[in-house]
Amino acid sequence: MVSNIDHKAMEALLRGQGCANSLKILLENGEISSVSTEPLINTILDSFSLALSFVDSPNPPPYYEKLCGAQGLVNYRDDSPIPCPNDGFAWRKYGQKTIKTSPHQRCYYRCTYAKDQNCNATKRVQKIKDNPPVYRTTYMGKHVCTASVGHDDTHSSKMIQFDQVVSELVMPQLTTIDHQVITMEDKVTHYIMNQECDIDINDYLVGYDQIWVNEFPPFPSDDTMFLDNIAAFD
DNA sequence: ACGATTTGACCAGC
DNA sequence: GCTGGTCAAATCGT
Image 1 (cartoon, rainbow, N blue to C red):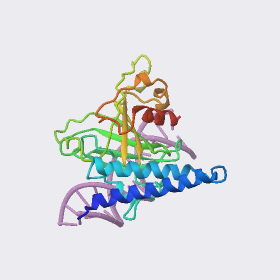
Image 2: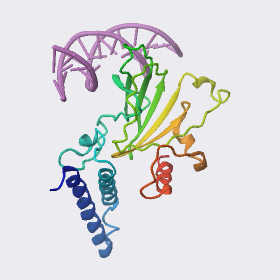
Image 3: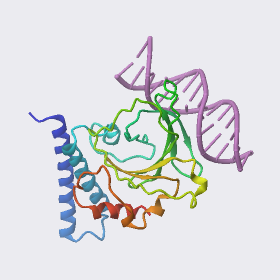
Image 4: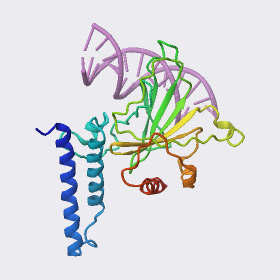
């Protein structure tokens, strides 16, 4: 008996295999110049990432079904719901706005227990890049509630934290922002980078030696691939 | 029925 | 007046 998860993983692998075969034929026939291979390559990578996510975790992220639907992988539309990565707290969405300086909408969350426990923690999540989807999460206030939901490892979320503290002498105007997270979403995988102030993420993509990895299992492939992906955002 | 989400309206700051 | 942040009624999902 094949489980539903195994079946989905198999589906993703077969899709990747089919695209790889198509790519092989194109390469053998020398048709690369006339046909764009990028969609094929992207589909292969997406399919394998998806399959790996099922192997890695039997419970895909909650937005997986929205990304892939019952029939399998579909394009991640810009109007798709912004995922809310599990950061150990319960959040309740209270607003969403189109921001003039960005083509994407910004979502507003506050602590689920804001009223019950007078917790003033809020966060904003905004998509800042399309391909791959990258989200900036800005945390405001501090959690005073005791109802942490804990970090959920059943999801295949993976995090990279940048834990540098930027001196207030450097950015005194940014001290009201407590914490910022950039989430890079590769279909089903979150890479989260934390910052202590509100600055452009590109400012932190310069030096790889500035990066340290936290809560990150061994990379399925290698670190340089991820670092290359980060650099590609600029 | 209840809690969460959506979305238009409202408000404050610039 | 414009923009971002919040409110609150309507709607949706379980």
